[in-house]
Length: 177
Image (cartoon, rainbow, N blue to C red; front, side, top):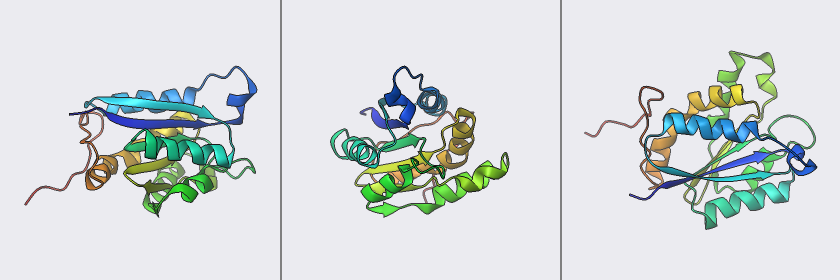
């Protein structure tokens, strides 16, 4: 069985401004390492808040690097430079609005400003693209909420079988009849 490739994209203008420690991308990697027991390989990029750069990165990860899952962090708020959802929608064949709805509902349990978040998800070819917020605590809260559906979504797309540490996260897969 081959390793699953998972894209991790940190979107931040601070990344192109010089020395930058990407704690958000590392939080995604740490969380996925907690969740997954199957082998996986991160395909990792830190890019600026620029629509064309975000689109090109998502396309490259989906079409050329064969990532079954691409997780972005950053650029989902109401600031003028926050364009990750628009870039995601531009490159996706179909949108998966339930992911954003569930992440906002989960985040509202912790902060009233969750309604300002514009996270979304969509499908491009054989890849599921999920936008996450930028703060590590929020990343984990949102992934805890949506990740149980991700392995089955990838199964339905005929991607690699993602095995999880069920003591940490229990994926939902329907029982065979």
